[in-house]
Each structure stands twice: as structure tokens, then as C-alpha cells.
Image 1 (cartoon, helix red, strand yellow):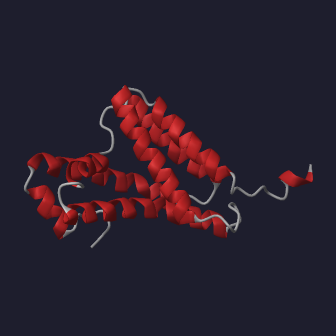
Image 2 (tube, rainbow, N blue to C red; image 1 turned 180 degrees about the vertical axis):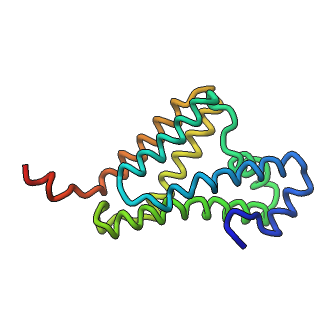
Image 3 (cartoon, helix red, strand yellow; image 1 turned 30 degrees about the vertical axis):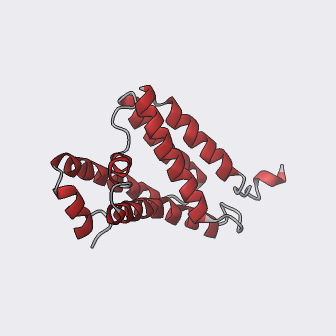
Length: 167
């Protein structure tokens, strides 16, 4: 099964609620956006990805939030199997920036002690929390601030190029 296709368990939870089926379908749009994360191997690519989300959120004044987060808010506390499916969806989403961050570490852009999985979780937490606040406040600013804070945290693991150190 491709990661962008909902599994049978997810379909069971969603198909019984037509509105949630629409939310699930909308959440698949994130998978399309995640393709850019596979190609991230430079710091600038990570910044462009964050800028993309801020720009898209600004265009809607924060409306829409995160479809996957909406599903989690509605189902995670109601059903353990649903919570597990949602957790797997978030883990799949986290795997995209993790791949890019792993490439950045392997290419020497990030320090060897950088943990790509932890940094990816930091980014996803900032993104989803920022999207929730953006929806609530009707502004992309909360998302922008959250992603900038995540990038600042991640910058602590950024290695300086040798050329930059030769000034």
C-alpha cells in the first residue's frame, strides 16, 4: 500500500462518517506537498518548504487548518484503533522531513549528532500547532512564528561550510 492511500482500518473509521471522508481526502493533499521534502538536501530547501506552508496559510487567512489534525481531534480519544491509525498517519507525514534531514546530516549540512527523527518531529509539531492557531486566530502569523522557532532550534545543528569559516 502506498503511504498516500488510506489503509483498510482508516477507511473503516472514515467511511462511516461522510464528513470525515472529506477530511481524510483533504489530508492526502499533504502527501503531495511532502514530495518536496524528499528532495531537501540543503538548508535553503527546508526554508522554502516552511515558506510554502506559511504562504498557503496566509492565502486562506488560516482557514482550513490541518485535515489530519481535525481527524485526530475528533477520533483519537474515541477509539484506540482510530488513534493508532492516526498516529501512523502522523508518523508517515513525519517520515518525509526525516528523509530530507537525514540526507542533510549525511551530506554534512547538519552536524553528525543531529537526530533527523527528532528534528522532523519538532518541525511537524510546529507545523500542526501553528496551523491550529492560525485557524483559530484567522492569521498565518502563528504558523510563521512556530516554523521559525523550529528552524532556529534546528539551526543549532547546522554546520558551517568550510568556505564560510575562511574569511
